[in-house]
Image (cartoon, rainbow, N blue to C red; front, side, top):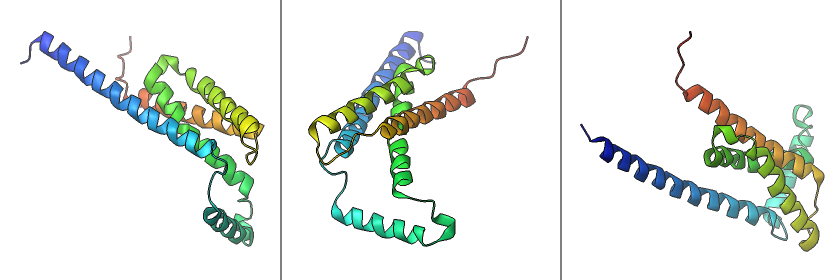
Length: 157
């Protein structure tokens, strides 16, 4: 059996390594979001043509005609910010849950502001603020649910 001092040291090393990995993953995520949102065009003409063909195919069918570019874009913005909510809970803990929507709104606002000021080809849109913040909230809720499911049950009194 390991001595308490050895266990404490091992736990500190494990936590430090986990923080380094979390910092690297967070940095890669933020770089990917910046790359997607702060370029002159979000994607090339080849992807645009494929997306146009796919949306036209959906439009021809009654059951999928509701799938429009605006809805796909909104969903993509939501999905892009789900990891931000996850990272917020990992960084600030379950009690810091409120940082996820705040960070989602602030990051999205900064992106929209930069697009409006510096990128003529991009359009700043309030719907993006809503979608991105919603994505951060979904990521936060997923982490809170996971924390609840993994927490040990407390005996009733």
